Image (cartoon, rainbow, N blue to C red; front, side, top):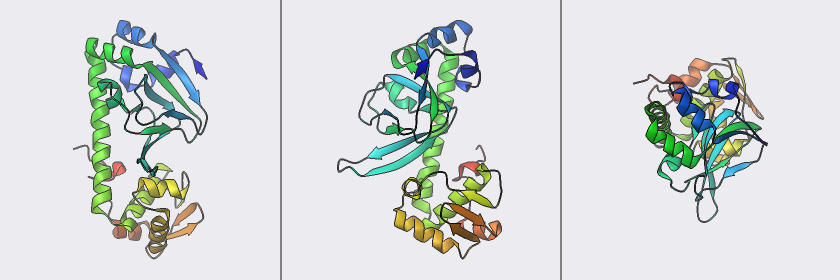
Length: 237
């Protein structure tokens, strides 16, 4: 379902913070707020962008698929980020599919209007550069995580990051099914399960989709959180 844009929808978005009122109003004339139920495919890889999607609520999962049909979870986008702005700006095909795993809301800005406003409003250009820079840094951290760590280290650092995100308690809940988490970590489900089993010797207990952390210092010593890899340890260098 799509509705007109409200002030409440855009006030929270860094994208518009420094734009002039005329430029913002012109951009939003070409935008709607769209609510998407769980399971919605926002766009397929290989298709051309028709909108710049800005996430307002919920989450979007970005998947890559091989020609043989193998699918992997590349990234989970959270508010208030833009979804694959590089494809929109360059008017190039999407390299990933975007799919909604939970009910979510998006600001949809017509792609041609977004590109036109970028050329006219320096504040929007600066905001886009900041968004692209943040996405680039996340991708570099992900690559380092995949190439520099063992399966158990990846799983352990994921658990520690999830613990902080869920408030720092000793009981955490996996946010989605283990197959998806394993895919995001560059593992098979079996490898992820083996990694969790090995970490039970390092301070955790696995109970289905719940993980109890009995010794966070021991877990950290085993998996080695790194401020230059793990987003929640970011040093903003």
